[in-house]
Image (cartoon, rainbow, N blue to C red; front, side, top):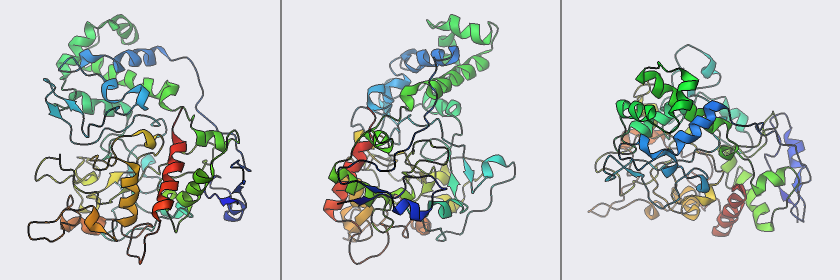
Length: 421
């Protein structure tokens, strides 16, 4: 039986053309494409320096953590343990407050903006829509939702950094993570095994401030240039190019993933080759308020408000952005140990159940108070509940779940095809 696949082609392909492209009964792709991957080249001197920095534990306050301690190469530059939050601090006795994301596939991450084309404008971002007013996002018409005035781009779960260079500052100087100080970093850079290479690139008379800034830039160059951070080597990439076949379960999962009335996953996790022929990143770089349950390990009495509390001067603490977190790429999601910004879920099955049953069986995800009432949306104050997505499938009131348990398992099988070799 042929399985319908939506979202293979770029935006210039009509829906009629997309509907005519079906997975063959043997799981092969009848519409193969040539993927345009980043060009491969030897690492520049700056990127080579960044590689040395990436694995240097001496840049941390404890002398025991490097970037690679949490962003493990063998785990697709994500944690390789089931720890919800990274362990760090000067004495390795503290913990971060959010789940550590993967560093892969950031070479195409746009800077933060609100609405279309704002990234190229010096004007202030347009005002967000009033709480509760939002565009419906559909896997069959992602272009329409992209035209809405929505937050998009940026790094970290809350978009507070615009570049990989500024992102590296976050964990490096966070007292709960690498716990370094600018003075300590500069001092250790001056005496590092690679210091000669560093000074050849930036000059022997560099100040401490310039030394640290160039080191952070080198880290960014390493992530941009090294193929390991964006290999596009998954089974799905091979399938797109007609070099592999999907199993019946994977093919059905793909159809459910892209079906706007079923999983509707592709509304946010774009699955199609873009207009330039580049492989899909499985994210639209936008933000959603999904009301994930509170993580029991989080600081008591401190709800995580996400984007509105990111400290960005361009949006401030606008209530319309509270509860919003960045949509992550689903590439290599099947290898992760924790999910969502607070690591509240520990399996893809839990994630799928939450998407499908949050509004039907909320008691499965939210705790009860002492009086027996349900503490609905327990990590988001009620004044921000209007921001929660209750419109896009599979969310929203309905008589029955959008996906059966068997269909959820098939989507999980498809997600397994996104793991890089």
